[in-house]
Length: 236
Image (cartoon, rainbow, N blue to C red; front, side):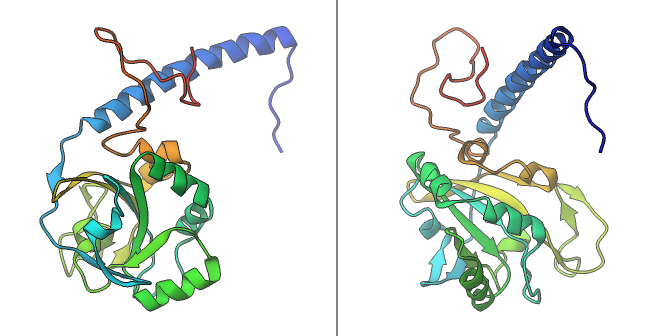
């Protein structure tokens, strides 16, 4: 195993301060990126998507469960698969009920959706016991429309917004965010590939959404936004 270099405490402090400056710059860049994400235009969801879950068939609107925002995790579990992908398994293992509760305090619901039939999902849930609500999009356009089922027989293959070479149907992972206003549902954001690697924890998930973290503060007029001091990543 390769260990870090051993130095004096004075040299360590110099190196640490250099890294701290880069960390602060990264935090500022991330905050700016999150702000740009909140300003991303949104589009109306025109289709009446339906999903099957433990309580029967539900609509996309039902998944909001009284919240104004909804985050959907596209879990890689195809109709003919025997189990879900290891990465999705790991992310669901790291999604405790406390995180889901914290999302709801920010007016945001969370659900998982796969193309596997509902009976397969129910059997997997009986083993795993995850607190997340998990639904089947089997037989619908949902997974195709949101580009998490890539099938050249259905549409030209696209992954992470770029054309890809694909010769057969496959499932990919990701997250999609939605906002409701009155009787309309809007698609605000989707992320795939490495963009979905950093969504463990309520704040990381909320940063994907149009309304962000719902922090209870007002930005003073006439100056550039700084991170909220309540933000655990805040550095002065």
